[in-house]
Image 1 (cartoon, rainbow, N blue to C red):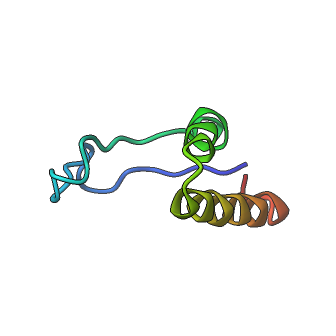
Image 2: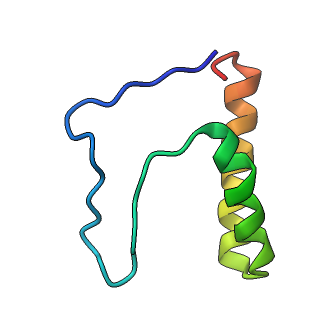
Length: 67
């Protein structure tokens, strides 16, 4: 099981509002489900790389028993 808690600010406020329209906390299921699919559907290499990094991180967390 993996758990986390927010320390300090609860609202995410992006500094670069030209590139970042919104920031929010998401669950692991959202990150590995609809967000992952949306990034891959763009066909852009940078987003594919981001998905690969996230997949690797999630695999490590699962393998360590933290998730």
